[in-house]
Image (cartoon, rainbow, N blue to C red):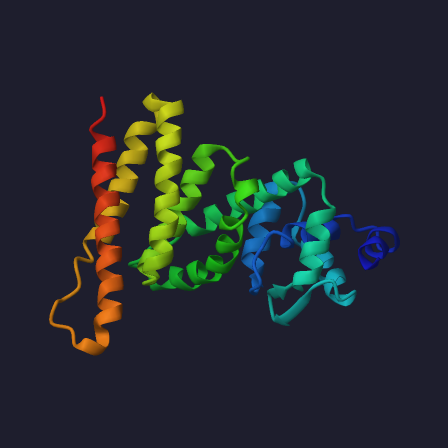
Length: 244
């Protein structure tokens, strides 16, 4: 296999680590900044030249592609083969690394700063891929899960993806409630405050106008349903906040 040749011939074990990380990301371009962020956390004493060399070798052996400068993609088949060959504990470690790195990148999002929007949009497909890995997500510390859900939900909301925002925030609410039961003193204030804000933000969208034409009836009903759902989330979160 090409990855074995890279390791043995070119003496570059980092290439396999990068490919294993990519196996947990989405089917979308992977920016250099994301890889570099993971690399600096996982290998703090190594340099960017080593990272660049590993990526170049992976491209040369067609394990990954670089459709544009400092952007990388990996085939779905390669992802699946790499991921399913890994032991469960290794999968968990890599998943946690990917989750922590993407959360860190999403935390930089500021809706009032247009420069941060491109980064947020680039993270969405990779964050969504992690969100769908339910078995591995359950293995992660609840606080880390909550931080991830909070960041992803608020970005989806800012981008206008109301359906995804609600789905993520509802999952975050379940995590918040579980965390609150396990560690009420340390979690209650931060969780309730954050998710109250998220719930109120969704509720602030308000019910849709009732002046819509007949052709918009289906969309109107769907929007009304989403508004009621978000309002209930906001109410539940406010009740959590008032718990003694």
